[in-house]
Image (cartoon, rainbow, N blue to C red; front, top):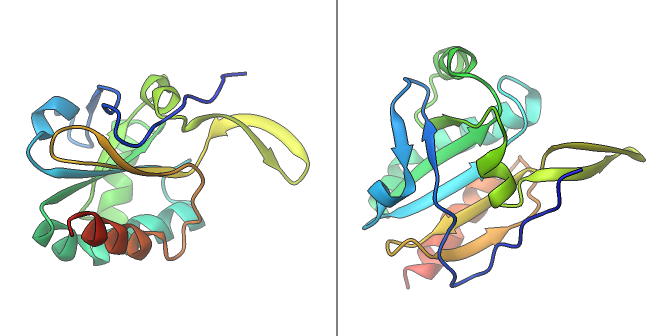
Amino acid sequence: MATEAKIEIGKKAPAFTLPDHNGNKIKLKDLEGQWVVLYFYPKDDTPGCTTEACDFTSGIKEFEALNAAVLGCSPDGLEQHQKFREKYNLKVTLLSDEKHATMAKYGAWGEKNMYGRVTEGVIRSTVIIDPSGRVAHHWSRAQAAGHAEKVRVKLKELQG
């Protein structure tokens, strides 16, 4: 089983390059100068993940007004991401991490306990990265419902 990476506030966020839902390569370093909300979720088109993605989409204008890019990341492939975005008219960028490498670097891949059964998989979590590329806040475990609003409030607070 993978060991959970340690994400530390104030430290440089782990670099990544991942394909988005259109196959474009998204690099963290290309996003410097703006805030980044990077949220990790288990699977497209499942109840909790749909709730979370729709909540981030509902608030996308507010995130944009706070100069923040919202990126959702899961192990799903590009075709699944495209279908998920189209089905729910999602406005967030969806990244594909099929090999789990970026998720592992962010502590979002590892052991989790589901109803007493230990499995390995995606740990729903979120990182806010500041415009200089440093970790500004980290939720190591997140609940889908209401999470987007908590992230928006924290982002506004961090911007002072």
